[in-house]
Image 1 (spheres, helix red, strand yellow):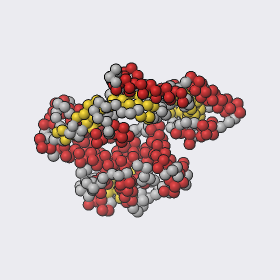
Image 2 (tube, one colour):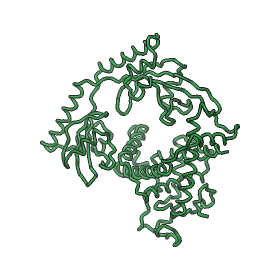
Image 3 (tube, one colour):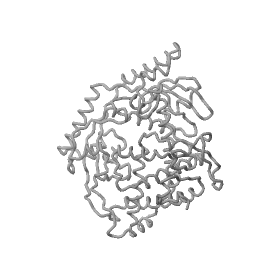
Image 4 (spheres, helix red, strand yellow):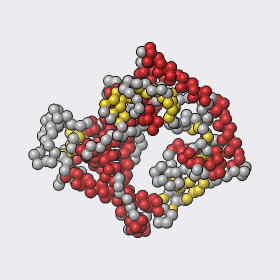
Amino acid sequence: MLLKTIHSKFTIKAAFLLCFISVSMINAQEIIDDEASQVEQPKDTVAPATRIKADGVAAVVGDFIILESDLDREIAQLKAQGADLKDITRCELFGSLLESKLYAHQAIQDSILVNELYISQNTEQQIQGILAQTQGDMQGLLDFYKKDSEEALREEMNEINKNRYLASEMQAKVTGDIEVTPEEVRTFFNDIPEDERPIFGTELKLAQIVVIPEVTEDAKQAVIDRLKEFKKDIEENGASFVTKAIFYSDDGSKSDGGKLPTMNRKQPRMVKEFRDVVFSMQEGEISEPFETDFGYHIVLLEKIRGQEYDVRHILLRPELTQEAIQKAKDEIDEVRAKIIDGSLTFADAAREFSDEKETKYEGGQLTNPVTQDFNFELTRIEPELYSQIQDLKDGEISEVLQDEDRVNRIKFKILTVTDRIDDHKADFAKDYLKIKNLALQDKQVQAIAKWQKETIVDTYIKINGEYRDCDFQSNWLKK
C-alpha cells in the first residue's frame, strides 16, 4: 500500500499546485491586520496574541487567515482549469490550503528572501495569458476581480504569488538536502508488493534539429542606433524614459514603463551581461546600448539603496529579414532531405547543423525536464510537443515546423522518435531512475510529515466551523 499512499498524497499536492498557479484573488493570502480585530488568541498559544476579524474566518495559521469563501473559490478555479476532483475530498483540499499557509508563515519567520523578478514575471504572464483568452479585455478582468486599476490588480496578484513562492521555497528548504542511496532505492522497490508495482506508460525518446534565422549586422546596428537616439533624446531634450519604454520596448515590462523588480547585489537574478552593466552604473545614469540573449537594452538606474538597485530598461530586438528567414528554412529543408535519403544520420546532422546548443551535442536528443533522462511518457508529454510528434512512427522524420521561444521569435525544427518503450510493469533495472524518484518522493513525504508535526505544535492554529469535523492527516486540530 506504500505506493498507493505516495500517489494519494502527491495527487492532492498536484491538485493544489494547479490552484496556486491560478490567479484567484484569495483573501487567505493576506497577512492579518492587528488593528482589525474582534477575536483574541488563547493565552496558552506559542504565538503572541493577535486580534483578527472573526466573521467568515475558517482558519488562522500563524499570521494568515483563511476565509470561508476561499476554499470555494479555489475549487471553482481548479474546476475551471479542468482538474479532476472526484477522488479528492473538501477536507483534503482544505488541509492542503492549511499546509500552504504553514509553509508561507514559517518562511517569513525564517527570513526566506523573495525572488522579486520571478514574482513580477509570473504575474505578468498570468495577466497576459488571461487577456489572450479574453481578447485583451482588461476592463473585464478588473471588473471580474473587483479592482479599480491595473496597478491594484498587479499589486494583489504579486502578493498572492509572493506567498505562493514563500511556501514553495520553505518546502524546498525542508526537502532540499534529502537524497536516497542505491540501497534505499532497492529496499523501497522490494517493499512494494508484486501486484502493486506501478505500470509505466508508453515512453518515447525524441530528438530534434533546430535552425534559427541569423540576424544581420545591419539589423543589430539599427537597434543600437535607435537606442542611442532614445538615450540622447532623454538626456539632452528631457524626454521621458518611461514613455519611451511604454511605446517602444519589446519587453513585458513595457506596460510599467520598463520598471524591473529591485535588483540586489547579494542575490543578482538577471543575466550576467545585465548585472554587469547595472552594478557598474551611477544613480540617475542611462547606460549605453548592450546585448543579451534577449536583444539590446538601455538601462536607467533610478535609485541605489545600499545593496538594492531600482532600474528601468528598454529592450529592442533586431528585425529578421525575409531573406534570413528563407535561408534558415531552406537549410533545414536540405538537412531533412539528406537524412531521408540516407546520406546523413539524424544524430550527425544535429551535431553539424543544429543551432540548439542544449541538444546538438547529444545528437539532438531531448532531455525530459522532469526526470532528467531521455524518456518521455506519452501521456505526460507537454501538449504542444505532443501535437508535433503524435503521428510520428519510429525513425520517421517530421515535416519542418515553425516554432518560437522567449529568445527567438522564429525558429525551424524537425523531430524524430529515436526509441519507444511500451507499457510495462516497473522493472528495477530498466526503470531505476523512475523508481529512485519514487523513493525520493517517499522520503520527502516522510520529512515533510515530520516537519509539519513539529511546526504545527509551535504555530498558532485555529480551525473553525465545519472544518473541525475533518479527519486531517496532520494534527491541525491539535488533539
